[in-house]
Length: 176
Image (cartoon, rainbow, N blue to C red; front, top):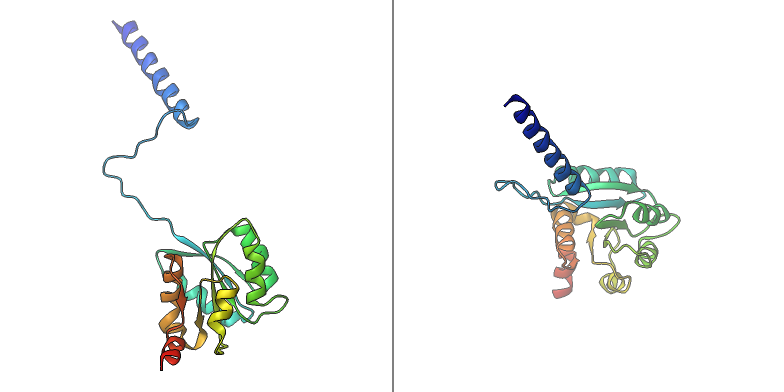
């Protein structure tokens, strides 16, 4: 009987080993425990702004958001393009006026890549044709820095959710 028990244990171990080996090779479906909770994937954001204080302020704001992860920072448009290629973020926040390559030029370069992040312009500059320029650059929206406390998170979430976002103050001014 002792030898028989040892033999059964060995067979059971071999079965468990071959089962886990098949699973690790993708040959067996992995199943989650019945009470497992699906944790939503955090959205990855790249922040590009030549002003360090502004960039760090945005990063700090996003650090408190459970559904958003800052995957990188860039201090000019060329670095934004390179980091987009490298990090493949879900969203790139682009300052409009940066050294080397401005926000619209960076957006144009990013749109030529195989990656397709959402693009949100973050700028101090407002002019009557800004929305048209944002659309022409194939960006998903813009937020004015002057209204960032009210609009930045709303804009980020809207764009990540597949919507377009055009600064609320500018929209009010247009409709007045």
